[in-house]
Image (cartoon, rainbow, N blue to C red; front, top):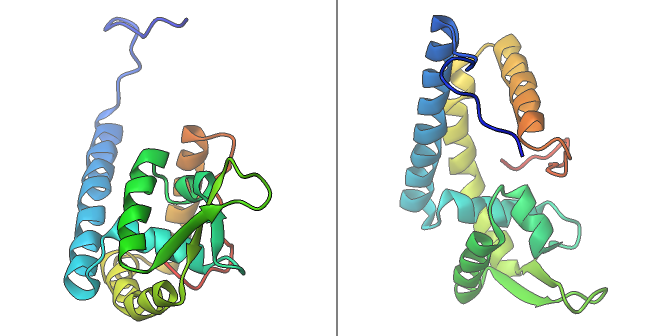
Length: 170
């Protein structure tokens, strides 16, 4: 077991690193809230619900195991289970036992769920464009993607979290 560093051996942030961290922290808190507000207002679903529908819509058979879906949406199985239950009540998703392993459950996007994500995507993408990409040059966008990839790898070196490379859905 590793002992956490004490005040004398901590690797303190420089002034520039501290400012970068504060700005990143603000973005991590405010961006999801802004995306959530737009989707709730315009589509009646949360940002996390949107991400669940989007990840399912990108699968050829519109099906994912709950564990894989939790990884793709960066959520816990518990959170995902509650969200999928809500989406199921709305007719957007259904759950069924995996044909390959009855101990596992699949989430399946229904036709109504596909219609919901197709209708919700334009407003969501416009909000993402306004809040993120309109503020960045193409080079800055490339740098942000590279930095986010490196940070994500530090968080989860297993690299199990993958999106389709040419995904049209955000």
